[in-house]
Length: 338
Image (cartoon, rainbow, N blue to C red; front, side, top):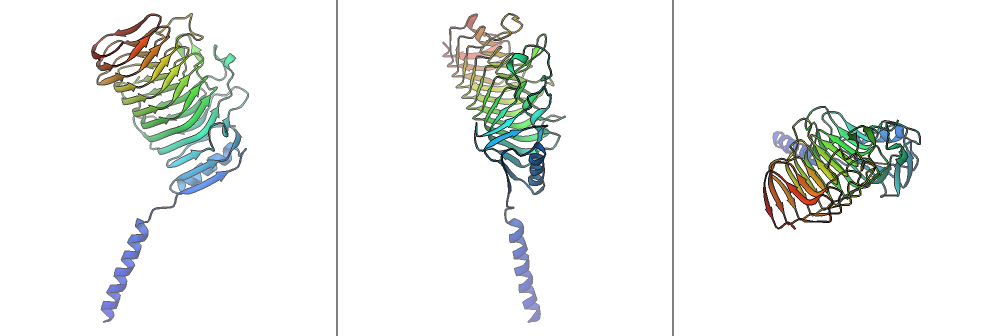
C-alpha cells in the first residue's frame, strides 16, 4: 500500500506541475507619470521585456525626449490617446529617432495611442540642416526579415524629418494613424517623406492618412535590395504632399492598393524642380499586383502612372489630374476604370 500512495502522490504532483507550466504568464504593466524622463521610459521597457512582455503605459501629458526611446521584444508602449500623450522632440536640431526598434531578432513590438511630435520647424525643411535623418519612428535591422512583428496603432506623427521609417521588417502594421508635416530635403533629387519603408515583407497600411509632406511623398515603398513582397495599402488617404501620393520603386511584387484616395499631390516645395512624377500613384512595376477602387483627383502629374509589371487595375476613378488620368505600361488587366 505505501507504493500505491506514493504513486498517487507522484501523479498528483506531476499534474500540478503540468498545470502550473501551462498557465499563462501574467503580462507586466508599468505605468509612468507625465514628464517621465527618457531614461525612466527605457528602464521600464527593458524591465517589461525581461519579464516576458507586457505594457509600458504613459499617462496623459508631455514627455520631452533627450534621446531615443528604445523598444524591446514583446513590449507595447501605450499612451492615453492622440493629443493626450505627447512625445516631444527637442527644440534644437538633432538627428536621432524618437522611438527606435533596432537589432536583429526583435519581435512583437507595438506603439499605440499617442502623438509623436518631432518639433522640427517647417522652415528648416528646404535645405541641408541639423534635423536631416531625424525620424519619428524607425524599425530597422541589418538583414532581411530580422525584425518580426511591428505595429503602430492610433498614432499621430508630425514635424519630423521622416515620420515613419522601416527596413528589413517582416509583418509591419500601420493602423488608424495620421502622419503629416514631415519630409525634409537632403540633397538635390533626394528628400524624405511622411513614410518610407524599404525591403520589408507583409506590410499593411490601413485606415491611415499621409498628408502635407514638406518635400517628399506621402508614402514611399522601396526595395533597393531587390527584396520585399506583399504590401497592402487599404482605405488610406495621401493628399497635399510635395511629391507623389505613393511612390513605389524597384520591382516590389504583390502590391495591393485599394479603396484609397490620392488628391492634390505634387504642388509642394519641389514643384519647380520637376524631378519625378507628381502623381497620385507612381508605380515602378512589379508582378501580381492589384490597384482597385481608388480615387485620383487634382494631382499635378497623372492620377495613376505605372511603368511596367503585371496584375489588375480595376474600378478606379481618376479625374482632374494635370498630365492625364492614367499612364499604364506593362501587362495589366484593366477593367472598369474611368
